[in-house]
View 1 (cartoon, rainbow, N blue to C red):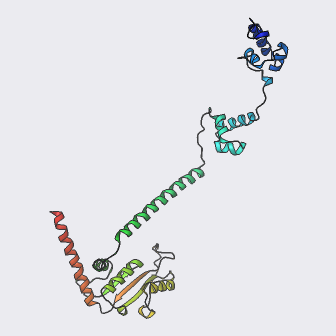
View 2 (spheres, one colour):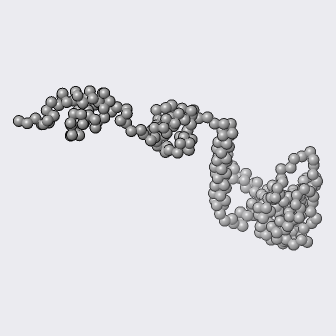
View 3 (tube, rainbow, N blue to C red):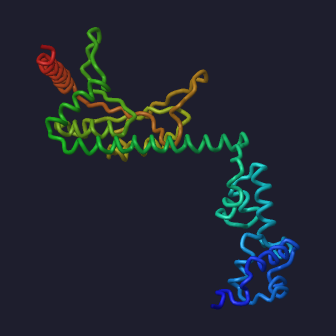
Length: 290
């Protein structure tokens, strides 16, 4: 019966020779030619477990990059920095240096300040967005307003911002002063509800001397839709050098004073209405206290 390896019947003896030649530094081709082994499977079995000599290994084109990447990583470089310097992919860098300790992150004072500033700006942006959202929700929740609601709002608005009599100084005049355009618009709408004719209104701009007085006068005239003859002479506030003004800028337009001519009866109605609101609030509070 023929041996399964044919002419390679003495396999162990042949393996001893192949291993000896391999350890002497011969290549696969040299061993094949020396032993006349023309079957690659047999040659593989003969040399199984024996590493190839160094001189037969082809140089890897990335060996230099790998060494340089490891060197830079040990110097504390990041993947991004190594990628820019060597022009290789982050995945390759990761394979090459993954056994090295992760470098401590080092930032300059300027970089740390920039990161902190960016974080603070983002926090402010989020706060501003939350603030805007809350205001928008509250505005939409108000919806429409009945004449009764406008009347009550107007009374409260006047009693907080308008001129009031004193026990020692009874004048019964309706005078409203404010710098908020929205307050002025609501107050005028309230006067319209009470059927106070617009020709009974007189306006006066009160503003600091360093502001753009002409622009402020034009702004208020347009807002209240009044003719120039409805405006009294603008009141100019003198600057006090010992104080620091905060109300500066293009949006500073001073205050607008609205006076209702022949307003004694209106004033009495306002005062009486306010006391009525106070009494109603007291009565509404009683069930809560009990």
